[in-house]
Length: 386
Image 1 (spheres, helix red, strand yellow):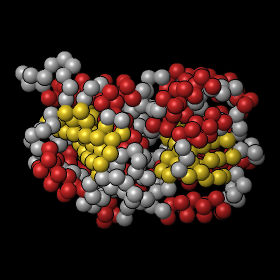
Image 2 (image 1 turned 90 degrees about the horizontal axis):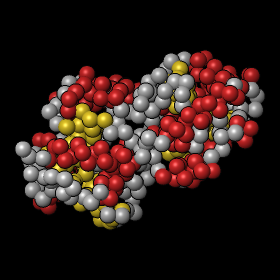
Image 3 (image 1 turned 180 degrees about the horizontal axis):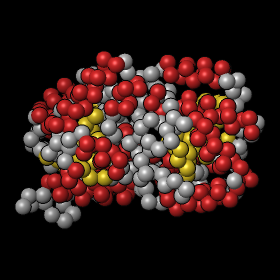
Image 4 (image 1 turned 135 degrees about the vertical axis):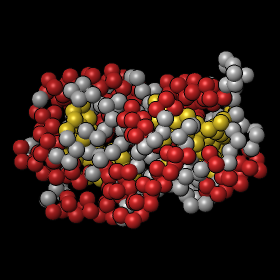
């Protein structure tokens, strides 16, 4: 029986580590929990994909990273590597079940150890908006198949909404545990220098994230056109990473900007550092996240930690934003309602200051240390033998 503080040998299997040029929120979630588990004394190995210029093996602190193949070949190579080198030598496997365009590992079909799955979100909405109908239908079928395959496994979700969506797909609700994401300590350090005086903020909004079609950034652009009729000096910054899946979406946004005559009001910033992100968040009035779906929305918490409220669609989980507390919600796709919320935060000084103050408090509960401790309890429950 595994008791108390016994150190475990844990295998994480995920598609991207933090150095991967296309890593996003879900990748950060997995990697940070894996790293923090090493700080709790566990021996943790991460199997992930290669990228140009990477080392096949290296360490990130005490986290051992092994890179195998690419998005297409990695599931097969993982089977080989596990069978030859790891079978019977780890206590538990933490497997990323499905992530966007990535092929599943299907470790439940062959691994002998206990498996804890990580499932970031239900992908149906993403598939429908991101891919042609035939491919989207195949991917939706695959996700439903995975729900059946992992129905009796322990699953980690990042929000109550994701747990509810997975339950409706057929997974057992009692097997789904919520482990919230955290944010970098850099954001909490920034709170000591926080700029919570509205007079020191620019009349600007920021979008943070990878430019994927389901993020619906064009909704922000249409709303900006309306806002500028009342507040002419309002500006928008679109910051984050270019999409490796849908580069045409960036061209679409540029076309929309041209058609709306917003060239002097909208700017792009790519592959910004965490320090640059903090500077952006501390100078703008609010973050906008108009997505059709998000598993959680870590950028909301990052903004909040900088004293910056968020305006989000009602497709964003309540776990990330409480309307009227750390930001505002609007009905998804309602451009007018989005513009009204933006104007309200730009003009209502007392409301902004209240949301800014609450945002700082809200962000305090999302730390990677808390996430790792919750995962540690789940893992110990899974591997314990009565």
